[in-house]
Length: 207
Picture 1 (cartoon, rainbow, N blue to C red):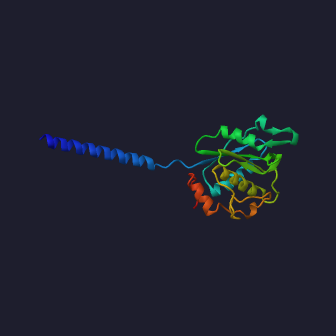
Picture 2: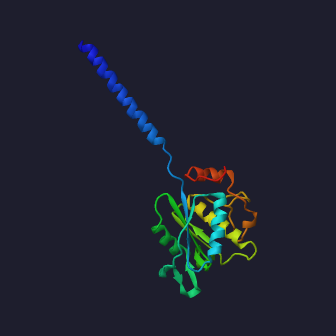
Picture 3: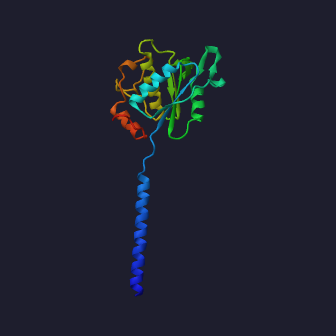
């Protein structure tokens, strides 16, 4: 009788442990929410431009939220060249960006960063690889298709924040500009770059 009771007790214990393990496995399979792109416009930029950039990004990646406009922090202004330091802007935006989000700052002002021996080099955008925030400027864009160019520069910098390097594919958003502006040739992330972002928990409109 004792042996039978022991057998039943062992079976109950085994089933309990098995159920616990199954529950743990189920919990591990629960997907994290998709990364959210936060668009942070600064006060200098027109709202219609922000809307067009947001619309362009949403066609590629739908999980986008536009934040209320804010002023530049005082420490980002470089008086000698009447520019705003991109690295300081990114540092500011990063401090406000929580886990699961990535922020792109948008401005029409001239922005700059240190490049090699040049302390203050004018740029269209900057994003650290990896990072939590980046910035894009409309200042240096050509007037033709400027809104389309702008969203492509923004999404390029967002790609850098996720760890993407420059891409050799001419049609890819991650193409190296090489000091020029080849955005008119860019149509999407290439398959390799898109797969990389999917592994970073990006949920695209289409694969």
